[in-house]
Length: 386
Ligand SMILES: Cc1ncc(COP(=O)(O)O)c(C=O)c1O
Image (tube, rainbow, N blue to C red; front, side):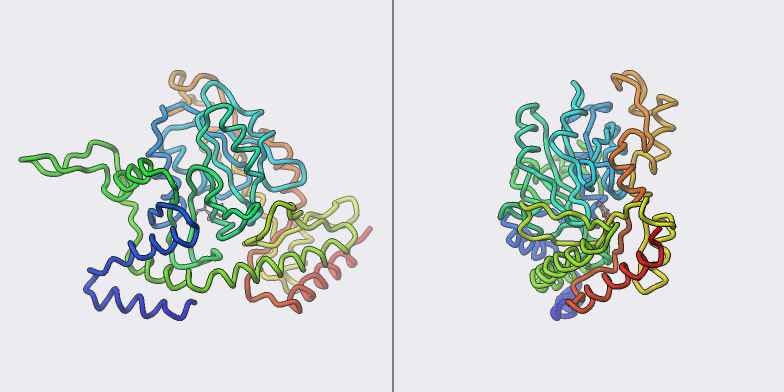
């Protein structure tokens, strides 16, 4: 925890909750990223939710989104009655690409929401070029990539807006915080109006009139205090994560049958949230699931598969709505029939079958911890080679 967390919390209490800790955090985070606006929220789910609510799109419009992610990425889209369309990942990777996004574009596509999964940043330049060609709004889910860098630019500044999570498990962990960042003045104003003011404005001789369906997605002062304190120590932590994941990946790559997540050359800083690798199933007697269980038992806490990250398979309610043609899937507003299952994204599905990750990877890792983790993987591999 940042050494000033308690000082800032104390300030909140001593001020009788009148200090503007949220404003201080918002300014500090915007400055850290070099963006004009930061709008604090109680998490990334509400951050992306208020973004979805701020879009001028119609129910039944399509938003292309990464298939390997947390449910929080898509919740807002569903609440606003847009239709999530899951682009497939590039084979052997965790992320979508310009190529896989383009394959999903229709007359109804309005935006693309890209997730930098595990901290690996999507190749944004081709994605932005594609978006310019089709007139799409591009935004980033940076929950797992805070302060990561792509070609010298910071994750979260690579498109038109971005959502962040500061939940306690995240790299910039506070409580249940989050935010949206953007350089777009009008969008920032709409986000505050919808997300903080609940869409209410003062009308003369009456009072508050809700001209938009708004939300009370305000970050608590105490969360802002902790997040501000954490922000002061995050840079060094991210640099340590970057060094350690590159070291660990190199060690894992030496083990036959093991392929660590590949770190693209365009990434200057891999703000790695979770470590992971794929196993070559034909090389081992055990299943990937058993391999992960053996890793956890041998001393890598949290080692597991995370197949549930495959959103088109995990969101059973989407398939139910789509097949019953309810909500946004009624025609109109929908323009066509949709289905949701893992088969929508065969590369993502195949990737998650053999992928093993652990979220206990963190900035506390030292070179000897990387050596130890890799040696545990090697031992489990050697116990299971065919
Ligand atoms: C990629 C991604 N998106 C969204 C979320 C949701 O964030 P929050 O828990 O802050 O709402 C998470 C949290 O795990 C995440 O990892």
